[in-house]
Image 1: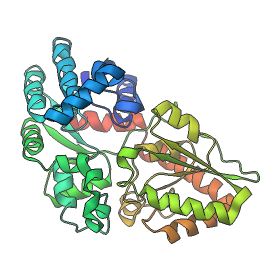
Image 2: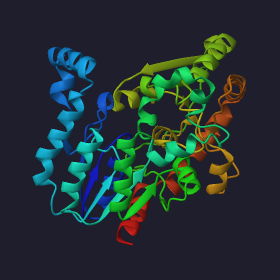
Image 3: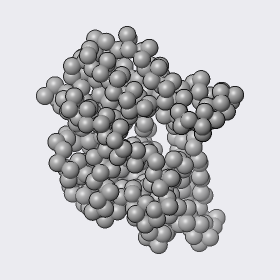
Image 4: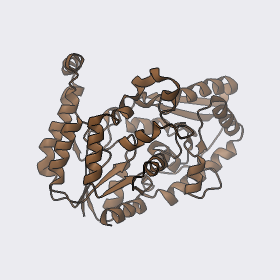
Length: 379
């Protein structure tokens, strides 16, 4: 098959491509690279002119302030439009979400319609914020969610521009159109599977693909210092519950001092991020999740102990009796207790790290996951 993967926010599509290529398929990725993260793509729609040049940036910001017109969104749409002649003769196209081109919804619908004229088999992946996900989370029926801080303090609304945009009329219209014009809807983890089922959407559940052939497992070695890593993305700072981790780390630093080393990074590229956390024993990911996101899974594949979503729903889904990750709760005392236990019992770090790798190999192997995608696309 010749397959087009549109959009990339986490390296999910890159790993899926690697799994598909290993099966003899031809795969092309198209995306912006997701700003500072700079993910690899075959054809880039990165808004280079309007975001990379200082003088143009100043003019762009002034234009947006006066007119609310975002030149970056328009540039990405134009770049995609001029790519369209190269995006024919594909057997299947998958969108990473309804905003895969990262442009205005009316332009996205125009471009999707042109693209879909030439590709009859299509799928929409749900692996992040999306209209039905936000619809459900706003019901506030879950124990907690990425919207919990917003429910507790409405003044945080400015931090929720990206999730809440999917509730607007234009984004909803785009999602509904894609839902009607795609052959399948796919959820990548339980944080999306649970809301989709609650909203009565028929979606296939396929776990994230992780390329365990290129991610090297290294058994944790602890000498006198336990290394903790926190990677901050300012765009999701509140959503991921980073303030809980920051407060916990302050206590841990004071409590253990020379027994711990704390590494904190902020808004760095994907390759820099990986390089920073390679020496860590513990990675602090997020607190408002039920399942693991992509960064957590890659760290688990390396044998790191990850504080992330590992709720009851997750352990039941995979029939787990032993911990493969630490279920990070939005509670500073809980985080401090969990961290203290691991710092004082380093053998447990090694054990969880081994289990984490084994879990990834069993449930997230990129070749097996690619086969599941093919089954759905061809079904």
